Picture 1 (cartoon, rainbow, N blue to C red):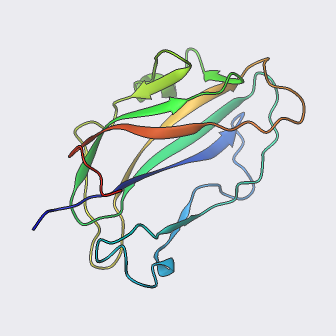
Picture 2 (cartoon, rainbow, N blue to C red; picture 1 turned 45 degrees about the horizontal axis):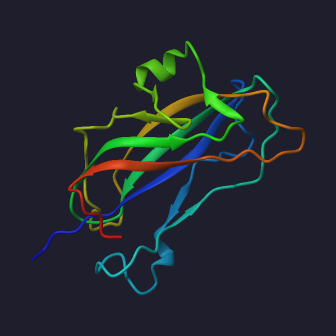
Picture 3 (cartoon, rainbow, N blue to C red; picture 1 turned 180 degrees about the vertical axis):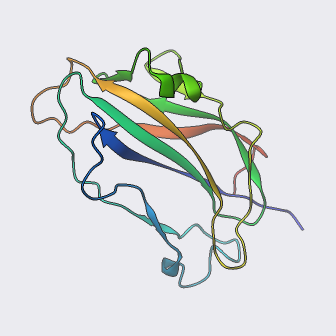
Amino acid sequence: IEKKYDLALRKSIVSVDGKIPEVSRLPKLDISTDKNELLQNGKGTTITYKHPKNPLEVNIGSTVKYQIKVYNEETTEGIVTEIHDKLPSHLKLKENSELNKQYGWRQLENNVIATNYLNGQKIAGQKENNILDSKYVEVELEITDKATNGEVLTNIASIAGQNPNTDRD
């Protein structure tokens, strides 16, 4: 029997300038959306991650703290070896941030930042009670002067390396 695993990543705002949003933006997992048990029998990824996506107000120079959480949606353990975050021009890695040092963030080319903080940390497979294991990192980004009034700022993180190398989807 071939073992499968499926790692999923979610990035959420934790705070803006040290203030936590009134409504938490951290995702709540809803496995009830897996009506056909596709996840449990290995035929699909159907977990819903519920969290508000309405824009939060920021200013040039604001510090936005994100949590990047990796979930294992399958039954076989997996390891994330590296996470990349492609930043748009209006966001940059906050300089002299103790948090960024703690999680080992580094600047790559093309405004991509990376960390291998989770490398070697096993993310267990899903348990019979549908509880998903997860690991997370945090990062502080700063709003640059390239941001314009009324603009919606977005950026996307991704899993750049994992072990085993072949994810189910």
